[in-house]
Amino acid sequence: MDSSDTYWNDRALLEWQVELGATDAILDAPVDRYALEVAQPAPKAAVPEKPVTAAPMPPKKVEVDAVGLAHTAAQTASDLDALSAAMQAFEHCELKKGARSFVFCDGNPAARVMIIGEAPGREEDRAGRPFVGRAGQLLDRMLEAIQMGRAADDAARSVYITNVLPWRPPSNRTPDKDEIAMMLPFLERHVALVNPEIIVLMGNTPCQALLGRTGITRMRGSWTEVLGKPCLPMFHPAYLLRNPIAKREAWADLLALNARLRG
Ligand code: URA
Image 1 (cartoon, rainbow, N blue to C red):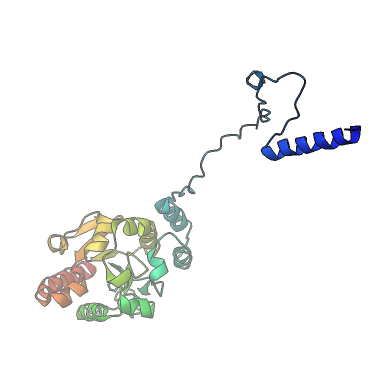
Image 2: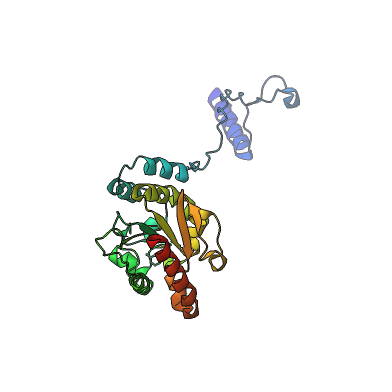
């Protein structure tokens, strides 16, 4: 066997071992593979810790002192036009969003009597004037009965009419205490600017606003004082439409008002 035969024999043997799965060449000395250190993966580079950030909070609701803002706005109004403008610019009463009109007043600002109702109803919201619906028409007839009216030029015979709220509550519901409190500074300023001799409160809502109590059935017909002026609580004309029997008491109250004016 020459040297080239040996080469080809060795090569064939090696290929046969590789085919059987051998991966390492046979060394001169055996290798103790248990003693070999298992290569550890290189430690990961330390990742800098993320700064702890607080979970995002929902935006904080800013509490608005609507009564305080109303007070400031009302006090800066030096006449009725300015008061009307300040009220129309007041954005904190939700009723404004649902109302068609801003209803401020009717009648003669020089009148001796200021009548204060509750809030505009559907007809008033349409017309932009207080007391123009059925209740308002009854009010006009009641005033006529004592020779008074909103259209009279003569201050002695005329009345000035407004409401606690200038915007119609949805479905004519009764105004709630927060709405009344929010608009009260404007009403107080309204009274101060008109400066009537006598105030008539029509129904429970103006009694709640200006006297701090309700119970019109007990309160009606009893003179009291509000904002330094004589004041007469009366049944609301809408109540009289529903309860015609109560017109007797309303008539007595009208006579008492007339007597005070002419006395
Ligand atoms: N009722 C009120 O109290 N005011 C109005 O203007 C109309 C109805």
